[in-house]
Length: 267
Image (cartoon, rainbow, N blue to C red; front, side):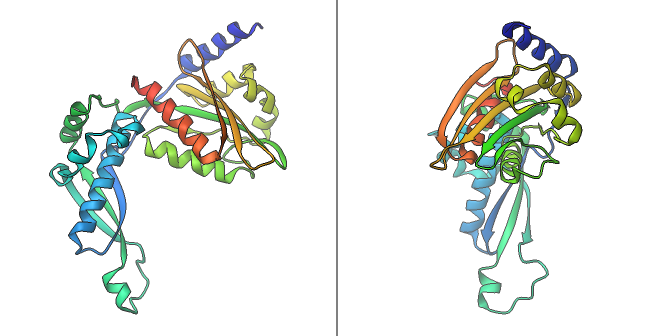
């Protein structure tokens, strides 16, 4: 099948079986702070949590660098609905002064949706609807030990998998990874993922009811850097780009950030 027609076939498979997914706790953020009575620490934690929420609700991770954001974050307390602490050493006996004064806590904060939307409006952004398309990430990796595809049942690539899951959560992306069990490993090849040229990729997307597919081919150099070729299949025209000579964490962060902005309709 000619390549343009095949890519169109993949898009049809994706769109025809797509499922939207409600992202939970979009207006909740979390930070690690020191002590429960240190108001400066709590204020810092609230600012961090609000930044997280703004990224998730908008789908645009560039918001953290917006020049107007620091002045808005100075009044972050005004948008708080409720907050709670959880001792990071819960169940561990307090045995010294550090345990009482400098004990660290998870600070979990829920923010007012109307207030968050108002902030986004001031920054020239719109909220991304909470019903979001599933993004299937099929990442083919070649390291010094050979080639594999990252999957929930694949023994290799644990670091890649955890990085994908972490960065997707930060952006409010409903991420799904293939299992890459015995059946899937036989059905889709490393070469098909790397070229996005096989019908098996579209069939895999359909089986997971994905609204979009991010396919990546990541290879490590002799110097220990990764070069990744990405293809996002979400619209009629595939979006392709390369991230050269990077860490795999940075390459994944860049790809998920770009994908979230495309799916959210951010310009």
